[in-house]
Length: 141
Image (cartoon, rainbow, N blue to C red; front, side, top):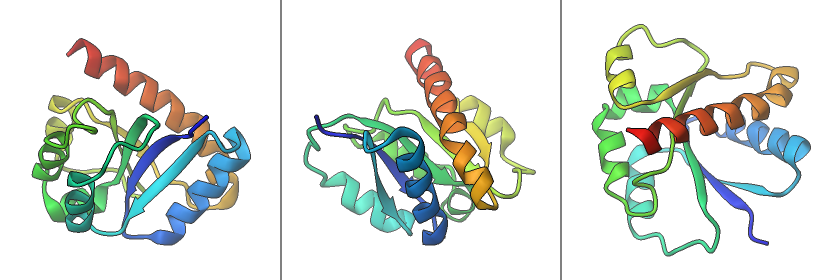
């Protein structure tokens, strides 16, 4: 069985590596991460992505990337057929002070980024809930 995929767009590769370890610890090898450290490379590479043989479960996007690229990044991601209906979950160590109305309109979920290993170990459960809730919103919207 091919693992489901979570696309992660985050400038901080150390956070991505910790998330990968936490997911493997909590959920074994049923989820794999594909990480990008820039929104430009993510959109370019995902636009030419061949079918993976396994579903893309979600896009996890660091809010700082979104701030730099603008909310049009999400629209560009939504134009990619394999990602068009996939839940997008934002994460950041700092809660968003602006853009909350745009997040709500786009049915985005926000999670606080873990800051240490014990928090990273708890994060997969929070992420799975956010993906389920976001997916339910997307399918009814």
